[in-house]
Image 1 (cartoon, rainbow, N blue to C red):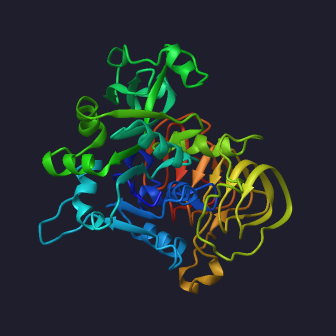
Image 2: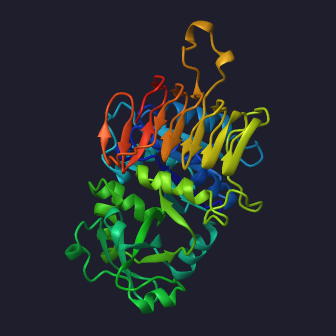
Length: 424
């Protein structure tokens, strides 16, 4: 494992997750009450014995930098690190990352100082628990030069992913980057014999093998494409070229995997965590998800009704009803408020920790008598009294300065103020 260097791609501007990415990089978006998206990828690395990790980002990276600095400190005997590398001006010039491969190219002079044989490239915005050691072992055993982790996706979301066709021995024989139409997807559907060969239970004809964005390169092969071509992107350019020039294998990962790239995916993943037997489980003693320790007080609840909920430390539930919802750090729900089928991200601070002149007339939290249903409420939002956030008209898309509706889900942005009696 110590011959492998890891690079986590922080992604672009995160427009599909807007407004959750209005003030933060996509990997810094809060997850499951107390985590951040980046914690999943970094925890998978640590649990796999990979301790040399670079995180590449260029948009709104201050909170991500702070989170990583406060969370991931390796002891001096392990000689590991998690380092954020952002797009920057240098003596050689400087520009925004032009794609996933260009992001690595711009910082490769920093990475190449480490004596590693393999480079593992990971997405920073996916939810999955994966031990990378079997992937690395298959890569070495098969003599592969590039290995791509794959998972199954149904046709209705296949256009969001790079789709693969595999031989029975796992060799990638074809790759199509995000084919948008049924015609463009034709002929690359995963055949039943391939699904059966890899023990995957899914209907043939409408099921595809999709790239998870997890790439393992022999270092020399990656350097070839970075130094000898102008290719800027893995999915659009390097992978299609590589399958005809190098031994490229697929590693089929049968576990739960979700690309948290859209508001709908983000919301659905949180609702999945509330199931009796969630497909992704943060309660795993052998593969924990790490995050920043905060020393927050215990949850304080008074005269509440709570049914199927995840509630983060430091929360105050001063009456009201919480049902099928995720409640984040330091969240406050006031008397008579109802929170159903929603994600509350909580707050960065308690009101009494801030100077008096910063206190608003409407306190941070969900105000008395208010209803929040089927919504995402970002940090430090101030929801007044008797507010209704339920999208009862079924609006699918709407944008304004106070709130957004995307995929039918109402999102209250960070630091937003919703006056008393508002109906959304």
